[in-house]
Length: 315
Image 1 (tube, rainbow, N blue to C red):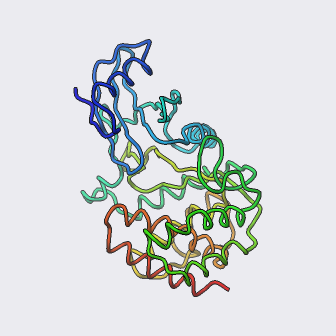
Image 2 (image 1 turned 180 degrees about the vertical axis):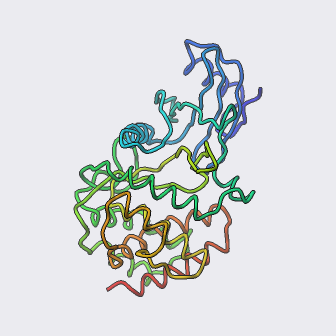
C-alpha cells in the first residue's frame, strides 16, 4: 500500500520513517492515509500486533495526550493514546482506532449529510461531553507543555490575548483583511478583567472531530482537540458564533436546549453574556481563519459581519 506523499518527503523516506524508526518492534502489514484535517497527517497502520492510528503534526502531542487522559478520567469519551514521540521536526501521537461495530467509526458530519443525525442532536451531545471535559481545572492560561506559539503559560487571560494580538497583528490585517481601526478595537480585549477560573478547553470539537460509535442514542468519541487553558466560555463561545453565523439569529442561551444541556452537566448558573461576548470576539478570529483556509466564503462573510456586531458591543 502506497503512503500518500503529503508530508513533503519522498515516499521511500516516509516508509522508512514509519516502518523503521517508529515501529521497530513490529512488522507493518498495511498503511492507509486517512487525513481529513487542515493541520496534520493521519495514517491507519496495521501491524502484526494490531491496528492503530498515527498522526503527524508540528507540535502539541504531549499536551494532547495529557488532556485526553484527564478528560477520560472525568468520563468524557475521547481517543485513547498509545504513545507520543518526535521524528526529526515532526511530532506524532499514536492512538487506538475508534470503531463502529467492526468498522472504523465515521465522523458525525457523515450522518449529518445523510440525515441520520440532526445538527442539534450532535451539538447537545457535544455540550454534554464538554461539561465533563471542563471539570479538569488547571492554573494559568494559554498554551502549555510542548505547544508552541504566542501566549505560552500566561498568568491571566488578558495577558494571553495581548500576546496573541501583538504577534498576529500582521496576519490579522493581511490574510484576514482586518483594518487598523478594527485591530485597535480588538486590542480592547487585552484590557479587560477576566475570571481567574481556568480549565483545559477542547478548542476544536466540530462535528468532524466526533467519531460516531452509535447513532441512536448518539454516542461517539472526540478526537483531534486543540487544547488550551482558558475559561469554559472559550469553548462555548465558538459554538455560539457558529450557530449565529449560520442562522443569522441571536441565541437565547438560557432557553436553548443545547446550552441548557451544558448548564445541567456543568452545574452552571445564568450565562454572563457580557463575558461571553468578550470570548466570542476573540474566538471568532480563528473561526474566520478556518473559513478562509477552507474556502467557505458564505461562513467567512457571516463571521465577518458577526465580528463587526460584537465589536460594537465592546466598551
